[in-house]
Picture 1 (spheres, rainbow, N blue to C red):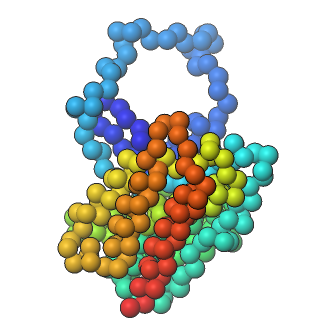
Picture 2: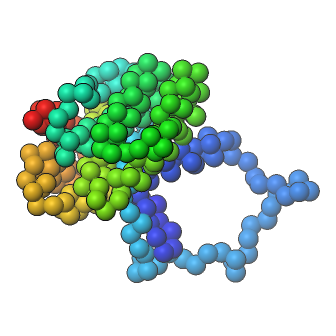
Picture 3: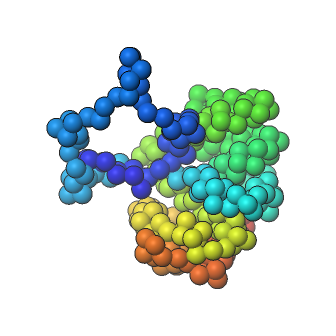
Amino acid sequence: MHARPGKFRLLTLAALAASLPTLLAPSQPALAQDDKPVTKKSASNEPPPFDPKTAEDGGLGMPSPYDKFVALDQVLSKAHVNWRQYFSKTKVDVDVDEITETKVALPTLLGFRISDGVMAIKAHDAELLNKCASDIEAMAKKLGVGDTELARAKKIRSAANAGEWLKVFMELGFLQQDIMKTLDKAENKTQGTLVIVGGWLQGARYVTSVIKDNYSPETSNYLREPMLVGALLAKLQTLPADTQKSPIVEKMVSALTEIKGIVDIKLDGSIPADKVDRVKSLASEVVTVALASSKK
C-alpha cells in the first residue's frame, strides 16, 4: 500500500504500467539546464508529513502480482525461474462460449484471466498472451463493457507479436483500467468486486507456486499483506445478500479469512513452508468452485 497526504490507494497493474519505465531506468542525479546536479529542495518546500487521521480511501483497484514477480526474479536470480512453466501449470483454461453463469462466475473468471495475462507477459509468450487477451476481451463484452473500452486488446496482441513486452505490459494495465471504469459504475459494483478478488487469488496461486519451489523465510515474506486481504474481505461483505450466498463468494470469504491469518506477520517475519502451500491450496479451491459454477 502506498500512502500520501490525504489519500491512499492500493498498487494496481495500471499504476505499475505507468511507473515501470521510471523503475527500469538507470538511477542518476537530476540535471538542471547547466548540467549541474539539482540541489535538494529546502525543508520549507517539502510537503507536509502524512497524517493518517486525514486519509481518505482512494478506492480498491485490482492488485497486480507483477511487482512480486520482479522481486522474486531478483532474489532468485541464481535459480533462473522458468516463468513459462509456472504459467502452463497454473493458468485457468476457459471456453468463454460455454460460460453461462454471468452474475458471479464470469467476473471471477475474468479476474483470473487478467492475472494470467500478467504472467504471460512475464513469460514472454506471445501465443499465450494472445489467447489471454482474446478471452479478456470476450468475457468483458459479456459483462457489458463496450468496444471503446476494449480497443487496447488489439494493441496488446500486436505488441506481443512484435516482442514489444514493455508496451504489452503498459497496454494490458490500461486495458484493465478501461474495463474497471465500466465495472466501477454503481450498477456493476458487484461484478467489479469479483474481478478484483478473482485477480488477486489467481495472482496468489502464481506467487505461492514460485515461493514454494524456492522456499526461504525471506521469500515467504513477500506474501505479507494482511491489510490488502482485509480490504478484499471488506469488499466482499458489501455485496448484495443473495450474491454472498453464492458458492463462489462463500468460498472466497472462507479462503481469504484463513489467508489473512497466515499472511498477518511482523515486518521482518516469515511464513512456514506448509502455510505457503496452504495459501496456494485455498486460492486453488476458489478456482475449482468458480470453474464448476460457470456452466450452471
